[in-house]
Length: 263
Image (cartoon, rainbow, N blue to C red; front, side, top):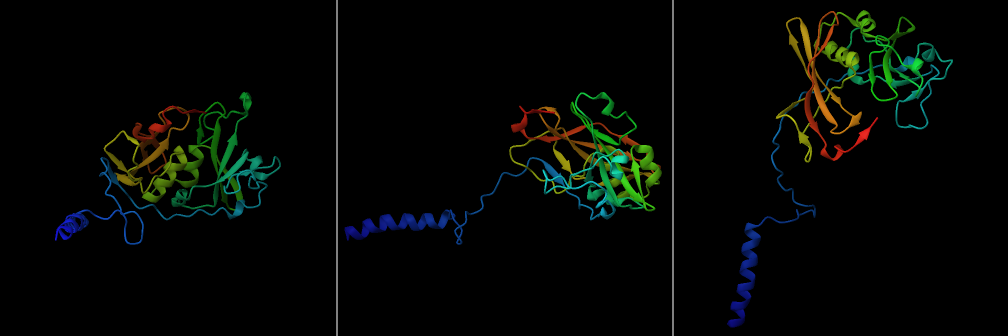
């Protein structure tokens, strides 16, 4: 009798605990999901446009893919290539979000590398659409294929001549991205450990304002010393292709990169 009581004192607590404590592992052996802390930041997601960009006319223009970057569209142009004649040192596939423009010409991003210590290789304002800062600037232009010719889009006036008027939200998105060099961010969600500078993060989208369009785009501050912040800007695009960039709105950053300096 005493042995039976001792056995029940051991078995009953085990049975009781197995009823009230969830198993550590699921039946298939995987860890049971543990509820995570609810995000302190509100995220507003918007669908990413399903655009496409044709780059076929640029496949054989004397700019072979760089073997140092086999999984990239990065292409180095030979000095005698037609792209080099337009001033491009390298080519890069256009962002697919550029595909909202009308008319939609085949296009690529034209990159111009300046040379360290060579002031003559630096482009003047008005000779490029945007540039990546640092001691050795990298300039960005656009090349389109129009009427069986390669046409260089080197500044906002060229961009307006090729694509204005801007009459749809899709056109406004693409136009704003090309004119500013900023990016469209989608499917954003809470990242544990990141430092959030706002209580609401909203994906890229377009809002019509009277006859114009407002586009929110993102830019990552990767040059210089930390913190390296992801910033959001509201870009106003008018029907005739004028651009107004709103104030910088810090969104979030990775504290692990606070001590990083890069150029």
